[in-house]
Image (cartoon, rainbow, N blue to C red; front, side, top):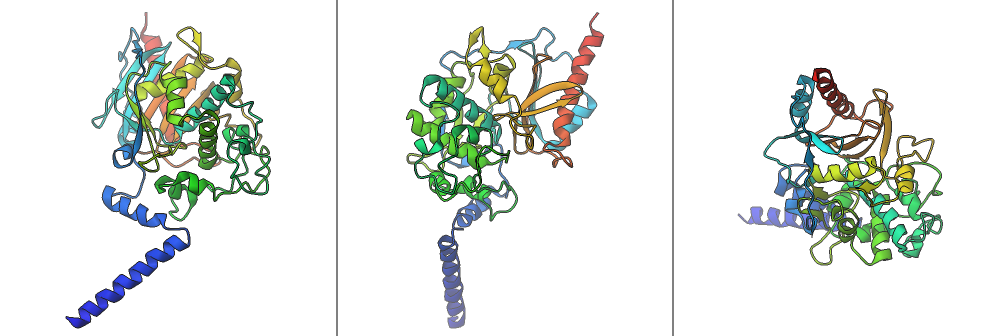
Length: 390
């Protein structure tokens, strides 16, 4: 018995020293990450993580606006290929908006049109657009204003040069490697940290900004912190005031925080809303910044944000992913595990897909095969309507 007690003391001592070593070396977040893995029973981020973390509530619009239902609402069944995509990749919501009315709508796995789900990186598009609104209001002078005007603690050889526009266009030069699988990298650390601003203060600007596209969640997090400093409002309050309220969001949303007391939003991800309300934001840009006949964001920003900014990132604008497929021009909001809101401006169509999984990226491009598949099958269905109409 004495030997067992002695062994137990040794094990506890080693464990304590190990944990202390993690915190001393900057890897203390792995302890919290491990605790969450045990609590959730999984190692990956999920659609309903907001249930397990602190959040800031974003109430629905004071004047909710129901979507119009198309005269042919759900009259064309999902194709067999689309049904298989839904089944294989855990789709929970799929919408096709045609001519500003819901043409097709399906929900799965117990979700419905008010269910909150994690936007993941789709919200980067919304944060970038919030910068344009802050400029319209005069809180920020222009896209060329220096980030240090708002975040004087920024460090690094090029910290005096980086602008808010560099953050929005993913050309900040921030020391950051986007990696969702390696638990020792910055991406999982920011997902679990209880002090997101403290983490961002440790990351310098190491490359000349504005030169090339490098996709980084950290750039969006810095942009959100700068907007809060510029306006005196949380990014949650700004998004509700700028977009969710005027767009008539019909259900409550929320944004995950780093901690309960005076928490800061994990603004590169973790905004939680529903398919219909994500579709509103996409439709706003389809309609060149106009909602219900009134301008909500400038057409100049819509055009700029949906135009590529760098040769090495010709599929990215300001928060929007850009491309052409099936001979159709599109731009989209995209998030981890296949969260998509895809706009086909020339066809007056928006496709929204939310779900649990996606395929890996195709060789040589920054998107997956399922991403293209949802587009293709949506237009097969739309064409079926056209061919069956007398």
